[in-house]
Length: 488
Ligand code: PHE
Image (cartoon, rainbow, N blue to C red; front, side, top):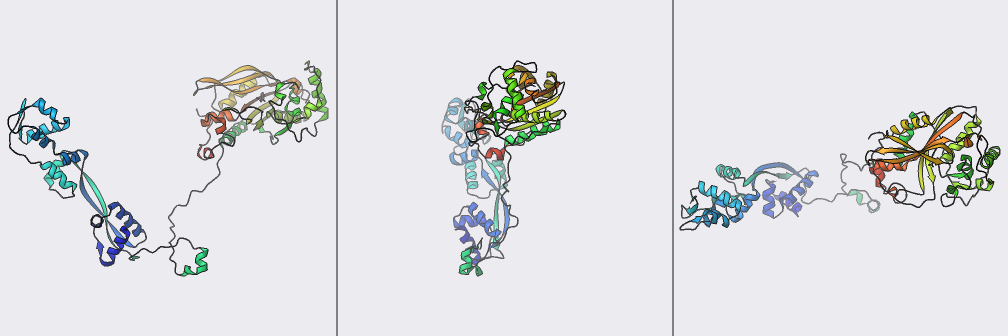
C-alpha cells in the first residue's frame, strides 16, 4: 500500500519532500512508510535523503495536565468564588502533587491569597499551560519562551524526529518488479529465463554459520586427564576390547570364583560366544594353584578352582582386566619399571538411577617398580589429584581382592563443603603378581576412578542420564565450555 503510494506519487511528482507529511496526508503510519523507503532505496528504485527535526513531546506529567488542566488552575477552581476555604480543607479536595504544585504556581501568578485561609484574588483565570500542551500534542510550533517554561517544568522533552525526502532512483519504475532468486528447472523448460530479472548477488551477506563437530564433555575431561598422565610419563594401555574372559577380569586378579561380583546380578555375561577361545595354559595352572592352595607365603582360598568359570565371557567390569594383561606381558620381559594408564568403558549390571548407569568410564593408573611402598602410592595420588584441582586428600582403608593394602580416596569438595569419595587404590597382591613371573621385590601401586563423577562436578550435571545415554540433549555438546582442570 505505502509502496504503491510512494512509487505512484513519484510518477507524476519530482519529490516527496517529507516522509512524515506524506504519511499523514495519505493516512499511513510513518514507520511503515520508512520501512518501504528503506527497501525501495536498497533496490535503487528511489533515492532517499535523511531529514532530522527536533520536536517536542509531552512527558507523562505533561499529558496529565493536557487532559485535566494545570495544577494551578485545578487549585484555583477548588477555591470558592466568594469568601475563603481553609488550607486543610483545600488540600483534601486535590491530589497531593496537584495541591503542592498548584499552591506554588497559583501563588506566583497572584491568583490566590495563601494563608491559613485561601481566597481568590482574581475573578477569572485562563489555563495557558493546558492550551500550550495541547498545541504541542497537535505538532504545532511554539515560541521560545513558552517552550522554555514548559521545559523548565519538565512537561515536555525534546525528541529527534527522523524521516526522509525521496526522489526517483536509477532503477525507478512505477511498480516494483518481482525479481527471481533462483533459476529453476521450470524456467529452463518454459524458456522464460530469457525475460526473467534476477536478484543480484549480495556479496556482503553473511552465510549461515558452519556446523562443526562438538566434543562431548566426557571426551573433553578425558583428554585433559590423558594430558596429565602423559605429563607424568605414563603410557596408555590398549583398551579396545569390551568383551573379556572371567579369567582376565577376575581369576588373574586373585578374585575367588565365589565372589559376589562374579554373579550375573553384578556382571553381564555373554551368551554368544559364551566362552573364551584360549588362555595361556602355563599361567592358568599357576593361577589355579594360587587360588586353591596359595604359595608365595599365602594360603590361597582353599576351594576347587573351576576352569569353566574362568572361561566365561563377560563385558569387562573394570579396566583392571587390561592392567592385568599388560602386567602379565611385562612380567615375561626382562624387568623394566613402567607407568601405565587407561581411560575407557566398563560395564556393570546395576539398576540405573541419578548417579548410576550400567556402563561408565574408568580411569586407571599404575606404577610398577622394585621396592615401591604405600608412601609412594600416597605421593603419586597427591600429585595426580592436585593436577585435577583436588589437593586435599584423605585415605580410608578398604578391601579389594587384588590389592593389599587398599585405600578409598576422598577429596574435600570446596563447593559441597564435604569430603567426597573420588576413587579406589591399592598395592597389587603378591598372589596376583608372582604367578605372572615378576621378581619378588617388584611392587605395583594402582588406582581407579570414574570419568563421569569429575565430569558431572565440573559441568554441573546432577543426573548422569543427562550426560550419557539416549536421553542426552545434543545441545549439551554444542553449548558446553572447554574443560579446565585444576582451576578451583
Ligand atoms: N578396579 C577398581 C574398581 O573397579 C579400581 C582399582 C584399580 C582399585 C586399581 C585398586 C587398584 O573400582
